[in-house]
Length: 209
Image 1 (cartoon, rainbow, N blue to C red):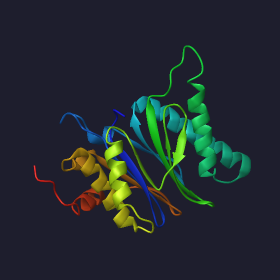
Image 2: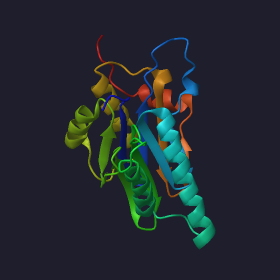
Image 3: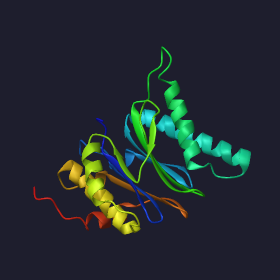
Image 4: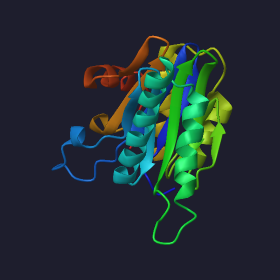
């Protein structure tokens, strides 16, 4: 709940993940901070919390996805991947000398069963959402999505809605260098470049400072 605000939402053809990296110093190179990760061609993860812990879980998810490809010659179903990662996370809550992972995940993907968006917490619990959020602005973003999200959104509408939600949670205009946007569709995983992100931010109504 103290991490950076991260949001995800379904649209007509897939999932959009948006993240605020919260750059606290002009000396930091924004590209050196990664909050959105590719797991497989059909799955992406956005994180909030301890980045090192998140990288461990993303690495584990990638291994599980590749094991499934090698064993079954097919991509791993999104719900199966979520359960495997959450079982792994939960095991770290049971034993002395270990601690829970200090990160929450939003995992989005597209498979033969449809479009999926899951939120997982450090305990290993998970829930499926049409639109969800993690991090310090979670409650504000969820309330915003409850009012604004609807089925059948286009990609552009979904990206705008996700960025509006981040802006609403921050109660300030977005830092263009601190925003990451990724999409997952049947065509694969894609991260928007800086020019494309800025183009989407330009569509937002500015908040008067």
